[in-house]
Length: 139
Image 1 (cartoon, helix red, strand yellow):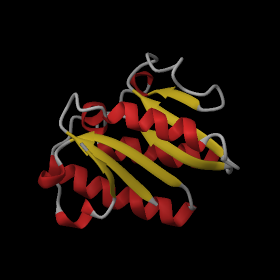
Image 2 (cartoon, one colour; image 1 turned 90 degrees about the horizontal axis):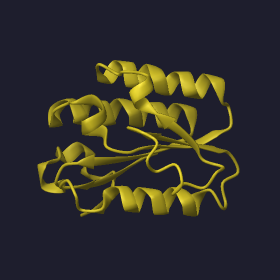
Image 3 (cartoon, one colour; image 1 turned 30 degrees about the horizontal axis):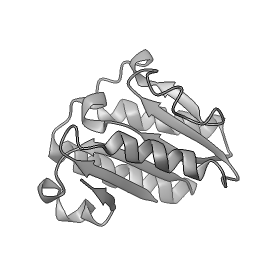
């Protein structure tokens, strides 16, 4: 299942994402990965959460991110949740590409039975209707 935390830049999406991951790790039966554009949240995350600095992997497009997610899944069969902070900043995509990517990622989450929680700097009113159903927090 995919979940979205959306809102304009500076509204507190990362705070919600960090609170959610730290709450989930307490009851998680599998592993959790947190993809971020640096290590600045390292000390805000529970030490059981695997922090991955995406800047180390230089994603150039959404296909490379999808491949990376497949790689995570192939190496960790106990992966229960993946968090991605700042999808637009990581990939530099527009809202149409975002919609297609979210639909693709949702297909992957259903096939491999894991949760993907994504924060993105976009107002809910700007989202395509097809992905509004995935919004859990709108700021």
